[in-house]
Image (cartoon, rainbow, N blue to C red; front, side, top):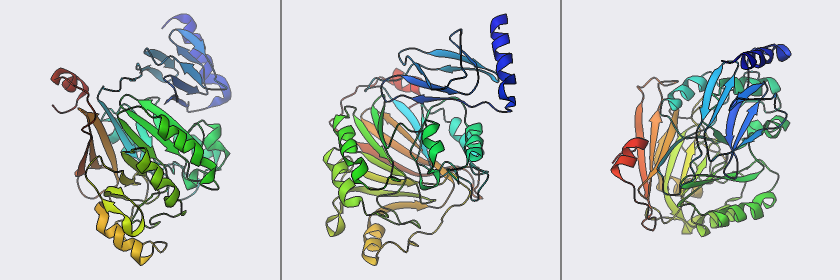
Length: 376
């Protein structure tokens, strides 16, 4: 390391006496990267920071970042709608009591996720237990590696000023494009659905990628302890998701895994449809301290709602887990992994699903598939 870099990084260690640095990368809503840091960094050979606001980096090329704990590479951002991609979804990584932040299981579970080498991670909310506690947020940030980027939505436990001040989401509704998929994030902790509806529809209408995924904390459909349609918003959200061809709706809130069949309609008119013809609803809230192994315990869902949910649910599990999503050759492949962390049973795959879209015409060579780690 050059003498100037050594001096700058040494100064960073002494600033504020902090024992841990918080350096992380997020995906901008355009095609750039956002670099967050509370210490001095060397970015592509130039001193930057401490950053009062995120540093915007060109996503069209890679970047080298040096900080007090080492060095990492930010890759060129994938914006090719026909390139394969692999990413991971998890949720509800919070602890079960105040003052801790993330669960004692979260760091171990995250280590298992990182071993899969995802391009990015989607978090379905409840990152900490008490969203007002800056100490809990500091503990959460301590667990994160700088890369890959994490796309987060706010959960009910995340409510408070720190979530937005830390830039963990770009507003109540945002969209991020990563290769063949657009991720639309929705804050289900706002006061009313009217607060977000126009912005949500605009984001869905403008999506141009082959696959479209919506993520929010509270589920549309669920047999977990909170049940389906907790806030009564389904009649406003479901028609939008169907109208704009949403492929997957991801949620957390209930501390379990649940996959429903692709669905269309509401109430008695709700029905399962073929793959790719309606949104697939998925709950993944198994990254925290406690999980729910028994479906159907919600006191909020009516007996009629429970009957429909029982009929249309395809897989339920109370294990600690994460979900890997891969897109290649015009299909989205989902794999649910039971983790070593937090489970008595051995780690392994406990669910798989595929969403096919015949109208997606992206030719991928065997060489490209092998290079990306995708099956042939």
